[in-house]
Image: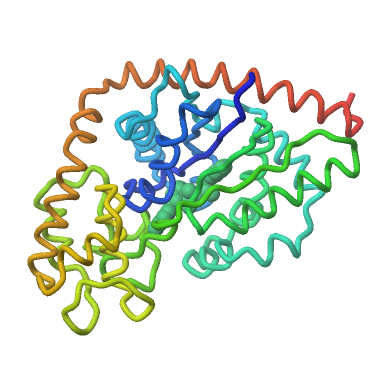
Length: 326
Ligand code: TYM
């Protein structure tokens, strides 16, 4: 393998949003020719909050199809389901023995989720970042393109790689994160202070990649705006900054160019154009999605699991030897 390794993943825990696309998948697609790629559907991570088993199964296939529909080429990139490669669970256990409680206690995603799922603050939710570090380290990953909310998890991954290497000899590569300049944190349409989330149940909060044109139009029309009427980004205009970021990401046009074009246009005209633009972006993606059969996707995932397993097994064999397992 002469190319560097890129790896990332998404939980099949809801409807993939335009935030997931802009913050993560878009970068995967843009970089996929330059790297040797692994893209996972992280079903074991999804289990850390309650899931309906039938829905989880369906969403796992849906996410895999959305990867391909968004432009990930299975001939070029390994697409696989995390639980199909059992090495993840085993290495996660080993790495948990070199992870400090205090390192996990300060994870903001854990603190947020523990607040939202008060009745189910389970051990998996707590050790979630160790499994994520495992995902990355098993494949000797160089680059991890993710949204801003994963910064702390990536930092822990680097710490664990270094700690293990110091204790047992060089075994893991410490990966670099890759965050988009714009759009690393897309906010909710209903509330520009809260990250757009695929698991939110608030109507109008998120644009899902599989939303129909009417739903997109309605959500954008109702999206919260800032006081005033200017189409401008800036710290004092969180709602318009967010809408402009989405507009810019799906068209590839600079935010400054959009601000210029919509100077004096008013929110209503801007929103109509934004809805049309988002729908024009989603249409081919959805057509591609619907053209993919379950049979096709199952065979992609089987092939992906084989390819991933070959790499993961090699790393785990080395780790088992180094820590003294016979
Ligand atoms: P998840 O499933 O929450 O999100 C998937 C990816 O989408 C990004 N993202 C966003 N980016 C911009 N704006 C948003 N509103 C937004 N919401 C989500 C996330 O940053 C992420 O890149 N722990 C990870 C999954 C994971 C993983 C890994 C990622 C497990 N193992 C190994 C990389 C490498 C997560 O929960 O992502």
